Image 1 (spheres, rainbow, N blue to C red):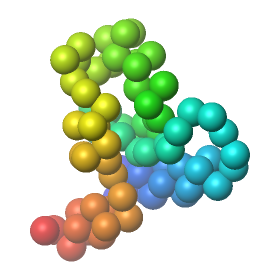
Image 2: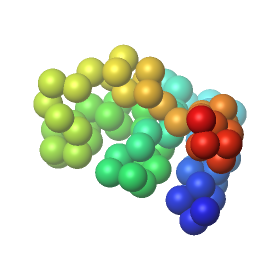
Image 3: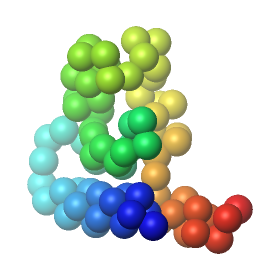
Length: 79
C-alpha cells in the first residue's frame, strides 16, 4: 500500500509540474527499481548518462511504459 501511495503522490506532483510553463517537455512518472521518478526527456538523458537507465534504452520505450492513473487502478484491482 505504501508503494501505491508513493506513486499516487508522484502522479499528483507530475500533474502540478505539467500545469506550469516549462521548456523541458512533458513530465512523466517512471518506475525506477520499484520507486517512482518524475522525469522529462532532458532529465531522462541525464539519468541515462549517470547509469540509472541502460544506455540502449530510448525515451519512447520509457514513455510507453510510464505510470498513469489507469495503471495504478489496474494494480489495485490485480489485473
